[in-house]
Length: 88
Image (cartoon, rainbow, N blue to C red; front, side, top):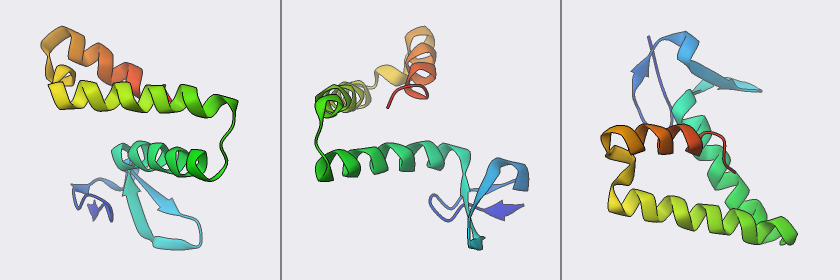
């Protein structure tokens, strides 16, 4: 068992990803998705382009879903969580 440096959860080694030159830093799979989303957001701020508006719309929709708690609904929530993994 190892600890995710991002969220602090203890997980099996197979569920963690090491950071290149810093193998002591390990991030769980769930946090890698969140970090990717935050990285894209920062990239959009630094280098605006045609797809920036689309990704910003997706982020705003995601925030609305989270605020309203729709991701916790029995059937719809499972679909929304699955969809989230495949959106920018």
